[in-house]
Length: 120
Image 1 (cartoon, rainbow, N blue to C red):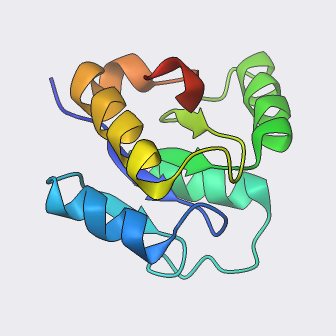
Image 2: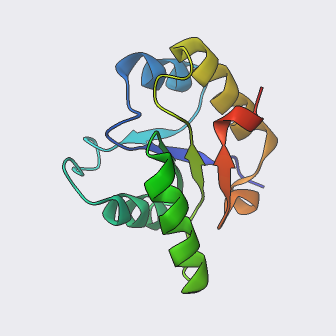
């Protein structure tokens, strides 16, 4: 059972969060590292899925719609974690993401959408 690896889209990839996750041995890929700047949401989800990574984003509404679309089309994604922008401090965001990654396997995240608010 493998731990989920993360893909942070352009909105969610603050340097301090990426550093904190990596310092806690969370495997993280950011949109710029994947050469995915200024791309459509669906492209980010496809890239995350192709690399077996759970997408983390602040774009709650659009990714909830995208998740439903992929499920209805029987498309598989590696998982999505959403959080409202500016709701959490970086430290709180970090704690919640580390808890999620430590609690669920990559397999359990497949085709699943999680709200960061559930991981206190």
